Length: 328
Ligand SMILES: [Zn+2]
Ligand SMILES: [Zn+2]
Ligand SMILES: [Zn+2]
Image 1 (cartoon, rainbow, N blue to C red):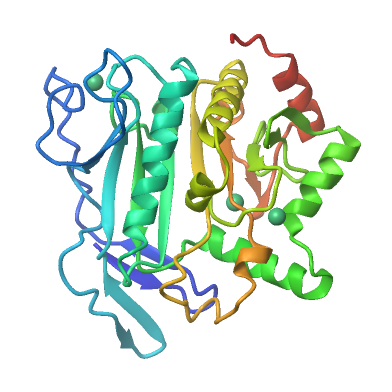
Image 2 (cartoon, helix red, strand yellow):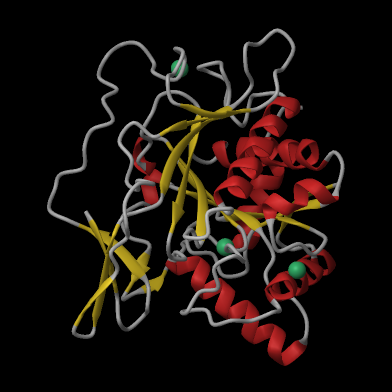
């Protein structure tokens, strides 16, 4: 596998002819229930449990921490080896306790562990961006049976985040305001696409969804970095955990399968050439979680001549999600 840069969009892709290794979960025993030899970090214990959430090395990593990226040019093209980190975040020691049925405290431990891993990986000056994501359900490419999320640390900023960062900077340059803060303000005022507001957090359906029932969770106060938020507010991850749990219950009333991704600020240790060197990133970016449900019956094609096509508006989607029966 190698990384190649698209010279037009300046985004990196991973490509190679080697077939992706299977994760080896063919045996009956769950590798994450058992004691793992490759534990990187552990969240504090929940009473009565041996551990609450922990990070382990991915059994078949896409990125490896050893080696040199060997970035090189080939005419107008750019390529490098996939150097970085790839971890599995085990959300809960229990095989059947997910982000939608665990306690707020357990989800809080997981979110705190995620923040600590991001902070730790950002200390490596080679790393530009850390992605936290979860794919759940067979139509979403779920990899493990155990409740897990994954984390990759890369020497480039992924395309979607790059677009958001550039757009956030442009908006800030002309208005001197954060575009995400402006969106939250208008959504709260109009109340058409707000699913739920809870403490410092809000869940909304985006005005222009890419897929039906797309949902975003954002802090209502301005903060560019998810992992730094840990230090700023108390009880942060409990509130966020509760909103995440309730929102996933709503989404699951529509479909089991979903992708979830955290978007946070890139590493400031390593200013990126493709983003330029700018000082306003703490003012113009705003961390958030995106949930992209996979709605089976409508999965045929969400793009129509390269334009995203969602057969459900966010106004209708939010109405269904708000009315969904949820517990707790
Ligand atoms: Zn398990
Ligand atoms: Zn903001
Ligand atoms: Zn985003």
